[in-house]
Length: 252
Image 1 (cartoon, rainbow, N blue to C red):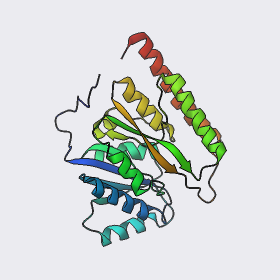
Image 2 (tube, rainbow, N blue to C red):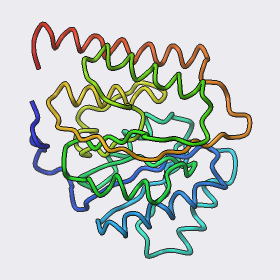
Image 3 (tube, one colour):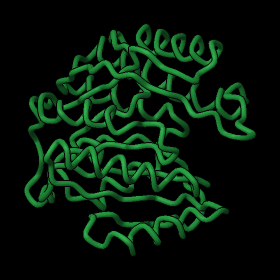
Image 4 (tube, helix red, strand yellow):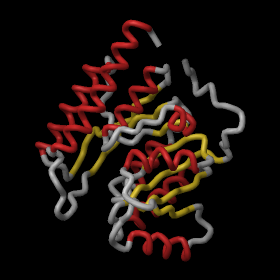
C-alpha cells in the first residue's frame, strides 16, 4: 500500500517538478494558446516543468503550429511527439508519463479549455497530496443534458467504487510514477476514473480543488451517446466494480 507517494524505485527520473502532457487531435487553432497558458501558469507558480505535445495523428496543421511555436520559443521546454497513428487519449497519456522527468504529472487539453488561472489554481496545490483532483464548482458553455450526464456518471462511479468525489474527469495532478505503475488502458475519458479509483484503492492520499471550468463546443462535435462510448464506459465501470469486490473480500 502506498502512503505519501512512497515505493518509487531507484532509477526513476524525477529531475523536474512537473511533466505536462498536452494531447491533440486536429487542434491547429487552439493548441498554441493551450501551450502559452500552461507555460504562463507554471512560471507564475514557480515550478520547474516540461511539456510534451502529443499529436495523435491529426489531419490538419496541428504539428506545424507546434513546430512553429517551438522555433519561436527555443528557450521553453516544449517538445512535440507525433503518434504513428491514432492511439487514443488514454494510451497517449500513459506513454508520455514514461517520457517525462517530472515528479508530478498532469494532462492539459489541447483544445485550450483550461485558462491560465485554472491551471495556476491546481498547480498551487501540487505536493499537498498524491492526487490533486479538480472539480467544477461552476462551468460555462456546457449544455444542461451534458451537465446532467456528467453528474450521473460521477454518481455512478461513486456508488460502484465506494468513494465520494465531486468529479472524476477533471485531469488531476498525479505522481508520475503512479501513472507508470498503475497505468489504465481503458479507452475514452473513463481512464481517468479508472486510474483515480485504482490509486485510492492502493491508499493514495487526495485533495479536491474547486475550479471554474468551461466547455468548448467544437464544430461537428459528436454526441457522447454512441455505442463505442457506452462500451468504453461499461468496461471502466466493470473494472471499478471488480476492484471494489476484491477490496471488500481481501482488503487493500
